[in-house]
Image (tube, rainbow, N blue to C red; front, side, top):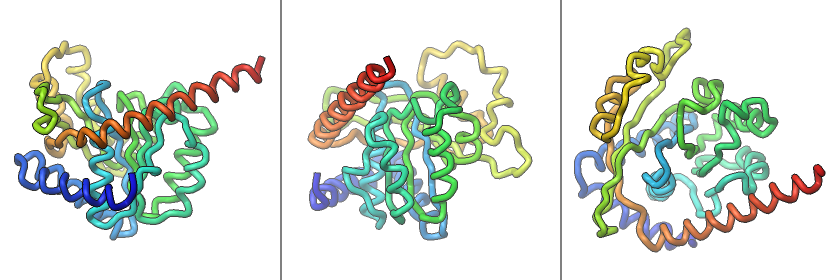
Length: 262
């Protein structure tokens, strides 16, 4: 996917978003806010969460292409799936400015159960040191609560929870709903996302997306509900193939590491 193709897709997606419903226009305003942070000598780390198949990858790629249209740097080589090239890209980040990076399905790096791993600590250190490089990072994981607390409370600025996707067969009419959360800036707060205040809902059974949205909207860190379109089919197919190739390389490297150990 070359730069001309990304710019062409960006214009098409932009037209679809600004002529869409109110939620889509809110989505674009959120991206403008991310871009504004980069003009104020800040970075932006966005955790994109939700069940598998709801559109985490689509959200990250769509957002990256639109941010490129606004003025940030982004290429398809800035998408990293699983552990493929993750170690290398962390060193590359410090040499970039106002660039968008996507880390997709990086559950091995940043999850609480892996909090003591060297690469996880390196993630936190890089994000901390590189904050004045004005980059935007999308960090796609299934569950936000399972993210290591240091990363969640100190590094992440926004949490996107995707909770519903339309089931229409017409790909051009597909879209999804997500909720934006922003971290409380209270310097002495031990729970900047407001999880502890929601303990009464911890064991509540939820089976519909309407019920899920009602709970999400009660959180102190809730900002708004947005909508975003499906990734263009051709772009989706190309990214899916790239992600499969990266996954195979990742599995091969894991198998090789295990073989070397034994």
